Image (cartoon, rainbow, N blue to C red; front, side):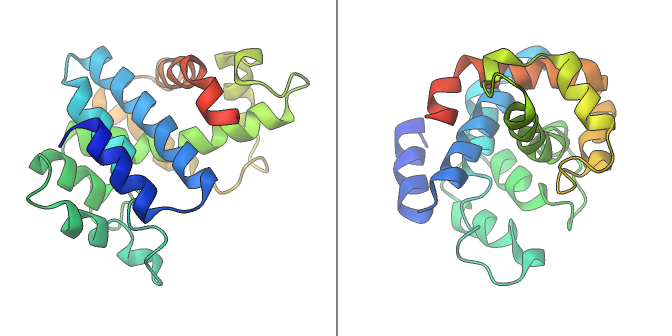
Length: 179
């Protein structure tokens, strides 16, 4: 599946603008993580873009990812299907791509929350140090599971580096995420 087709499916399945922006942030982050690890950024990017494709169709949070994976099966690379199915952690993430998406998903939300708390209220106005400071504040953005984000260590990327890579990727497309 090419990116344009994936975007069309994404827009057909997701109506909430914030979910689309989140998907774009995850795509950008996954592309950058893939490049950092020497993996295929196109395949990894599609995993990030499509990971929440079932979000508006599910009633039970434990089913999230499974329905999307079933929809994508046969349409995309099996590695994408696995990452989509496992990104919530209800099914153990196993591959490097699975773990990267699992860790990155809540990080994008933490980064957006940090941006909103910064005086500039812009992605380009924050840096890795600011995001890490917010990460360490237990009461900040409680929905961003810190243990899940720390799974980046399982793929050999220290937290500071992981935040830096994802933040820069999001900053590169900040117009699409905050407009």
